[in-house]
Image: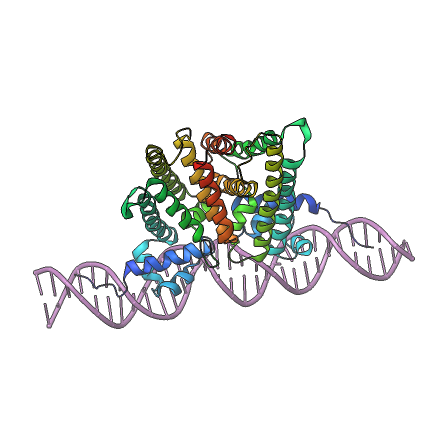
Length: 195
Length: 195
DNA sequence: ACATATCTTGACTGTTCGTTCCGGAATGGT
DNA sequence: ACCATTCCGGAACGAACAGTCAAGATATGT
């Protein structure tokens, strides 16, 4: 017994996510969000609470997607070998580094608000833990397949790669140089496999 | 033939730097800077122009210090070997990751403002280039001293390490876990040296 | 068709933003 | 001692900020 929304909250959230992703939390105003979503102020407040609530919703959605990427590392679709999957995902990160690329919203948010926003910290922790776990599993499989030497410590190597991903994406916000990042990825893979 | 300043612009800049470092550009207000520096609004504008001018001055100062750290990598003081120097600097980065640590202002600024502020981008580029150059030189020396196997590509390895530093410092803003970061540093050094 | 709960709209709240204006105080060169 | 110049302090600027209110519009369950 109520009126139906004229806008799709899902699409609105998606567009709000885009703005937060591009400009960060502080630099994004409600007016920006009204413009980007095409949704009226009050409807935003009715649907998402306040600015931080909308930000949380956006980051939740982004994080779900990011976790999906970590899952893709485990999923043996395409019949690729463990090392092949690692290479593919890793190179995908470097290839994203082109002008106009917004980097990773989780990382940008962690840097901008990690020191004052627990919600952001939780997401960052979860993202690191999930990617680390997926990488440990993949590296172990790669060792079983004799693609990575047994002397490599899977956990340490996984953490190195997680850190490299953060570094690449942080750097990509200001210096989106695909060739440079490629050389990092290839160099790192070379260090892990060469013996 | 003029009145002398009652405040020390050098100290004021130092304190302003501290605020920008902690909170970032957008989240820092002029009122914050007045409070932190103890300097009146008008005097700030007289001395540094506007908010962005003060930010530039602060980042200039921070960058000069950061370049000094890259220089420390080259400087063979303490009689340490090339690899020893690399280890020392690299571990220092990880050891900074404790609660309360503000990370690296250059990196935070690059992430926050890299997409809308050329001044920040220039600084980021310069910092990357300078650290990369210093690392290439150090790795070559380490190879000459047979501390690092000759099969390692100095430039690629240097870029990997630069990226790791960015990753560690970006992550440290939200997840300052010294043990975790130590394992990254040790893992990376292990990959570079082990053969 | 009616009642009612919700949505939309746009004006509006008080606060804070970055910045500027101005009058009085203080200083160094003549 | 005076003058030109700079600095300090505080009030004030319009704009933008996050968030709210109230009234008209609309769709659904009855």
